Image (cartoon, rainbow, N blue to C red; front, side, top):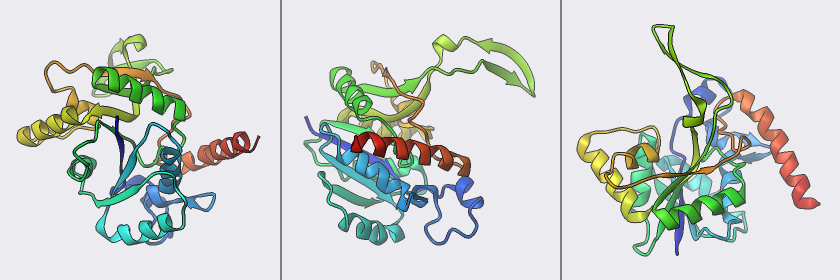
Length: 240
């Protein structure tokens, strides 16, 4: 079984960039420094340590490739990392990355480039689930009460036991994810994650594997404070 991880990292990260006006050329969220290292590189390091992963494919804006390659050249990673040109949207970036995968790839795991704290056992479990059923994602049950509203007025309360907050990685067999993207392109459909594309296929059931509230997506400056805490805890466990 050959597993490829796709990290879409071509986005502009406008919410983070607007709040960091003097951050420089690489001010987008995936390149912001977390204890002196770009968030993207922390995420790459995490998957390079995963025994289930065969290769990592990072989709970037064209003018970022040389800079990221320099970062990788200074690393001693246990897994190959391939850099490809992404698109204007996450969906386009993942689709471009899919076209670069080897034909013998079995499973594709798409992961947010700014989720560096996913736990390796969770990655292995969601890969195992996808290997068994063809499609699986990480997800957590919301702790807050969720309301459906219209024009700022509550319509109803949605039972939490039937809700899941989707996380990544989201893992699919190569034929399934390619079919989902082909159908989305043909229909002009744009989804918010890869699962929303796969959900549109007939006879494909996506299983949910429990994620973790530590698997945060760093999208705004306040997330960086929590990220520093999680990173310190990870380093303490590794040195113990």
